[in-house]
Amino acid sequence: MKTKAEDLANGVKKGDRAIIGQAITLVESSLVEDQQAAHSLLEELLPHTGNAHRIGITGAPGVGKSTLIESLGSQLTDSGHRVAVLAVDPTSTITKGSILGDKTRMSKLANDPSAFIRPSPSAGTLGGVARTTRETMVILEAAGYDVVIVETVGVGQSETEIASMVDTFLTLLLPGAGDELQGIKKGVLELADLIAVNKADGDNLSRARNSVNDYTMALRLTRPINKNWEPHVMMVSGLTGEGLEDLWFAITKHRQVLTESGDWEKKRSDQRLSWMWSAIENHVISGIHGHLEVMQILEKIEHEVSSGVMNPRRGAEEILKVLEKS
Ligand SMILES: Nc1nc2c(ncn2[C@@H]2O[C@H](COP(=O)(O)OP(=O)(O)OP(=O)(O)O)[C@@H](O)[C@H]2O)c(=O)[nH]1
Ligand SMILES: [Mg+2]
Image 1: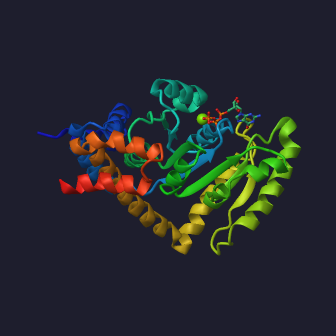
Image 2: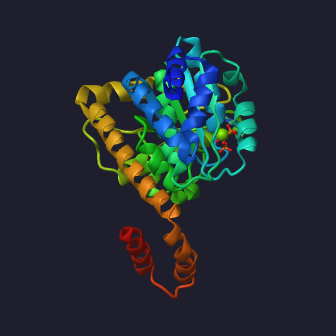
């Protein structure tokens, strides 16, 4: 008899949408009894992955990520690509809300047989968002999606995590004046392979042009020149579609340049390593939360650390001591 994982893997490889959904639900599950099946599923699917272009798109809330993905994604499916979109919102706690939100904002793609949209899972599980994003990408690639786009809200940690699991990282910014430029975190510019000033339409157009110049200057000041790839700033409008062809050209060019220089393979091996390390972190952390003795002292230690009675390093030591004893 076939196992659940084998059945799911076969359905995924055939591109069966309902089964793809079930497979994603399995890897998102934090139930202990689902872990083995999830593990076997990924083993079955991993050999069928590796060819998709993994693209991360980040930017502040409301910068126009979903609108741009809807336009770009539709252009791509029109030209024969199969496009998967994963929304990662580490701030979202109500899964239902974000399902509706993402699907309404990308209604054309949501109804496109060559596209698959997976809304953000709720950010309940520890380290869960990064893990499930990686594993969901495996499923979607094995299902034959050759462009996998991860949309993430640009808040802190999540950006760095997503950047470590994609091939091309695009940052969207709004047309703005010099003041706003000051507010852009240096890290944002350092992570980006491409930067696009979005909403460059209507009244925004001249401001957008100025911003492109400002960001280009800022980019030159903040990062060392990489001999293989120099990130550049573009101007787009997800709403009108203006600039999207150039943007796609730049994204594919990025892949080509990296492939030729050998950086692509290097990136893929870094992605595998960072997956392993984050799996280790998740395992240790969930070990802590599943450990009875640790749970008994955890609240007290957390309280003492948060109120400043115990220093954080000492708190960590106390917890690890109990964990290691067992
Ligand atoms: N003028 C203009 N408005 C846009 C453009 N893209 C998006 N908008 C508007 O900006 C608002 C936010 O767009 P979304 O695409 O939902 O932005 P988002 O970055 O996905 O937002 P979150 O997922 O909530 O972080 C909507 O009201 C859009 O209609 C654009 O290119 N030009
Ligand atoms: Mg969005």
